[in-house]
Image 1 (cartoon, rainbow, N blue to C red):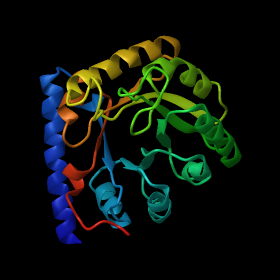
Image 2: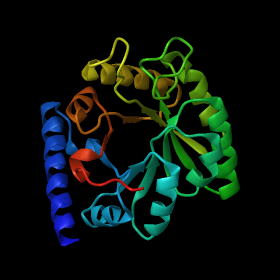
Image 3: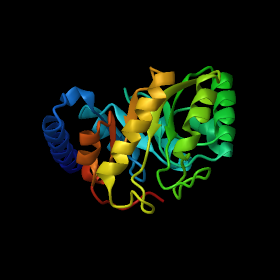
Length: 239
């Protein structure tokens, strides 16, 4: 465990240096960017170590892994973000531990989240996942609503009890006009965020960038970056 703590501390320090350097290059303050460590497939013991190292935001993408892990770490001062494609039959479980769902991309999911949040007596933050590879009315290869669908979905979230509209999220697309153009993709997300904030000023969170492209996300103006491998390394997976 001591070796693992040393490894995670070193990796975390390197990621912190990258974020700080990216902020400096973009003329931004370091505190403008929040690090979310993506702990999917890694054990609860890693979350516990990360919490001890000062990490306050962790993310998961599969409820079957996340639910028991969150329960085991319920005593820790961390916020849990759900970042995977979410099926409605998993919503009740996810609402039990997730402080924020970053993958809201359809009205049926909004309705399910609202119902379960009210039932649980919780307020759940929501980011609309934007698919920059989607056609005019479709969804992206990895989920997400097309840019043209943001306004309607945002209004639905904002008007749903138990939910809080926090902003936008995207994953750099593998296909379409933004494939391989992370800086342009994240810039487009920032433009969409500006439009969203005209109607919903408090929805100012922009989640973009991962281990390989966090610098591009920070340069574009992202408020949150989601980093997994660069912090946790490559280890045997759960299950």
